[in-house]
Image (tube, rainbow, N blue to C red):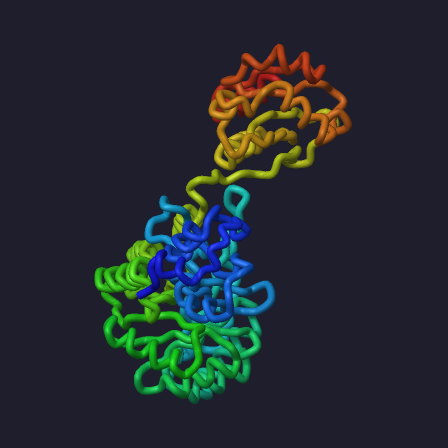
Length: 445
């Protein structure tokens, strides 16, 4: 269990300088005890105190990295049980199984399918993180060949699923430089698996049957000098997996129980794709760092990634688009100009309707701290003077030869002031984005 705030305070320099962020050493000690601060923030802590406080200053869940280059995957480093308390930081990594018993053509096709699971939605890009090559054949050579085939097709980080150290060693000869996840160290093989993971600095999944056995095995692996770990309690029944994931997270964050202070992995077991996605959604929510699935159908995967994205956005910061003049189609100097805010949901609602008009257009998104039209207007963030400044900043006068701009109908009251501030003719558009198509046909066709 971690130290209390008062126990930490006794070992701090007690300067109350505020250089660490909090105004006093006591406040800093409380932040350390709750995993909300890092000991390195204090420039005056002694080496002796630093050694004593290492456990207390470490994050409740360790940061573990897999992959290399542009495909690095960060897991763990979480501090909260509930998203509304602060936020979650590192989104759940999604992995898809590739059995080494498939034919070479099928392995290649599966890897390409995984590589193609990239989605653009509301200005965000959704990706998957791992191709989990599974040693179903139990043959090290077959496994190595399958890993080689997948590695030749995609740069996505591999996950090597085999409890045979010989198979893992052969696979690491092929993809060791990609820092794959090694699955898994068990009570029978943990010494060799830890040695292999250390040799390539790869994350190592520690798997045991039950939480008590898992804690004991983690301590053995840590005793060998390795801490880049991911935890698997060995459960596969949905309710039991969730119970274990919650218990691991709670013990790590609330009790500072170090053997559980690592990311976690969960495997789906449902055969029906929709049931499997529902199972995966539950694991993403409570609190898997990696979820391994079978289905790669885009229609099934997109809802899962959308849910993950929603869960891992900061609940206190709305999703926003860049404040700039956005193009829809290939607009020219005669194209219409629409005005809206930079709240993502508002902007993409407008963009979708403008696209539906089939008229190339400009959309000017004004930074309102990610608030909707009426909210921004009520808060004084969507006013004529500011809008006029943004129009000038983006060079709107040079983009079109007309001087007409369409404002949302809900803020029709801005018409006179904006005309005065900008010198443009202001056209009051529909209140709802759904009215843009009919409006555009009447105004610009």
